[in-house]
Every structure is written in structure tokens, then in C-alpha cells.
Image (cartoon, rainbow, N blue to C red; front, side):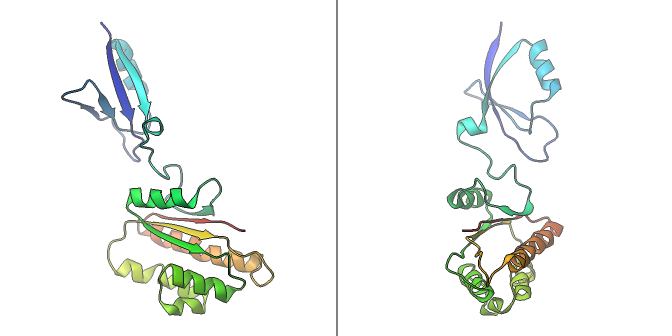
Length: 193
């Protein structure tokens, strides 16, 4: 006789083995790794065990940012700021947001980032001060859970040309490497107007 058992698959990172949790008052099982292995599929066939899969996205429990490397600087593309903020909250990470649409120069960008990230006023001096503010003092202040950073509407004008934009993004790439060396997630998303 076939047994119907709805399963919920959780794509947990770094999980090597299957974990099946039998529910006491329900015939549901929870399976926790990233993919269904051939061994599990074979076991289902051998035991005549029917499986209905309920994927997390279908169940409304999608793991946020699971497809995004943990230490990266990338274009915001298909992400909405509100979704990134929700993902940071879900993951327990710090959410840092800077709306740079009103900036016209390097100084404006630095001032807005310092103000909106609530960093010390010294950050407004140069890119090195910005890097220092988002790395070492935070690391020394205690354990950090991770960061989701959004730089929205980075200016694209003569005073903030392509070279300066790349310097800004390089600061955040260096910060991603800094936190990556310490095994702390640092995801930075940016957009242009």
C-alpha cells in the first residue's frame, strides 16, 4: 500500500546529509538539504513511498538571497529595496541603505552615505575613511551577523564620472573581501538613475 507523505524541502547551505523529521500528529516529513539525492529517490521507489513535494517558494518560506554569493557587490537588477530589507531582517543581518539620487559630486555621495549609514562625520572626507568606517571599527565592536547594503541611484554625471563610480564600488568590493576573510556575509547592491 502506498503512503502519501507531503515533504517540505529546505535548501539549507552546507548540508550534506538528509534529515527527515517525522511529525507526531501529522504524516508530514521535513527534509533538509539542498537537493533531492538519487539515494532518496531510490529509497522512495524501493519502499513504494509516494512523495508530494512542497517547495519553499510554494509554501511562502523562500530562503532570501540564497542564490546570491555571500560576499559580493552587484547591480540591484531584479531586486526591490523592500525585498532586500526583508531578506536582511529574515537573515538577522544589518541593513544599510543610502539614497544617492540628490548627490552631484564625490563629496555629496560621501556625505549622504555617512549620514544615511549613521557613520562618523570623518567618513565624508574621502573613500579611505569610508572603507575604514565600514570595516575595522565594526569588526572590533563585536560579532557581526552580516550586512545587506544598498546604494541606490549612484550619480552618473560629469562630477561623478565612471572612474569615481568605480572607485566607490571598489571600496565596497574591498569591504566585501574584508568581511569575507572573517566569514561574515557582506552583500552590496547598487543602482544608477
